[in-house]
Image (cartoon, rainbow, N blue to C red):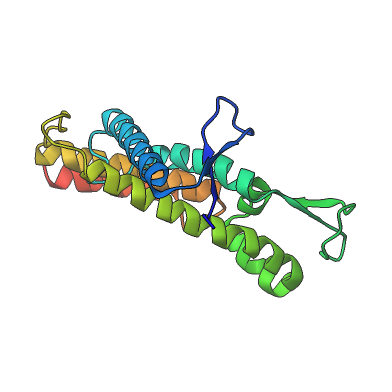
Length: 204
């Protein structure tokens, strides 16, 4: 008896997924080839949008990619509802979406371990799998970018050292700002800016 596998195919709607029936290895090979080609097209688009992504992934680029992965992850893992004691309850008033789970800063999430351990576990069961999912998607995307044929794509030009330093400093400023927004008390934008200005003056 032949095994039959259902494989998702993309549709214009984010929430709609149709399925193709694969009942032989020839068709499986064809579909796998299409999947690889699709990922290559995505990789080419991302590389064109961020030519230096293999050297450093800017925070804003990572954030936008993560938003896309979050949409798909939530489709595959529908939100669950819990009651006031954080016990699964279809009629409960607490809906734990991915957005809700990620709305806690790392510090806030850590504090829940002692303050509300059950809630901490519920949220962790969403945050941890998604973080692993996003990490693997980024890893696969970067590999696809590296695998692009260098003869069929334009490579980003290598910056001179001064330009490279400027980009690194901009990245530090952005990450400091994002960290502060997440509630990280160690992120001080004023001190960071002063330190960067002093460094840049010292290498002129």
